[in-house]
Image 1 (cartoon, one colour):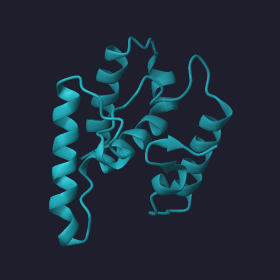
Image 2 (image 1 turned 90 degrees about the horizontal axis):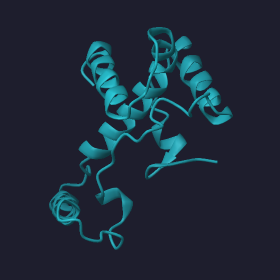
Image 3 (image 1 turned 120 degrees about the vertical axis):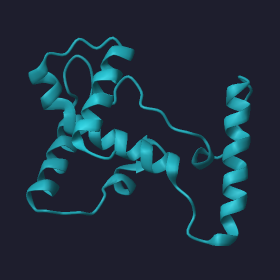
Amino acid sequence: MESDEAVWALYERWCKAFKKQRDHAEMARRFKLFKYHAKHVHTHNTYVPADPKKVAYYRRKRRQAKLLLSKGEDVSHFKDRYLPMELDHLADGSDPFLSEFDKDLLKEIEEREAHGAVKDATAELFAYGKPRP
């Protein structure tokens, strides 16, 4: 998340990993959606509570969840906030065309950029990794 170039390189690797055939123009069109989702995943996975008393508990739960996942064991008893997120196959929008939700999200991202808004819309658009309806 250091720079657009770093996110673009991640996007190219993501396309290869999910076997997405996108020409440069299509990648450029979808890049803002991908960057938004990548930032959301990164923020979720690196979050640490502000309350120092909760940090140790939170980190312990995160480590337990990662360990169980690495062993292929059930983690359904963990709350979503303790589970690591990953970029899925729709991180740059629906396939083969952008859905109305993706178009609306892209429009909102572009409007925020145009107005110089620095507020992160992640919390408004996602509740523990689930898009709002």
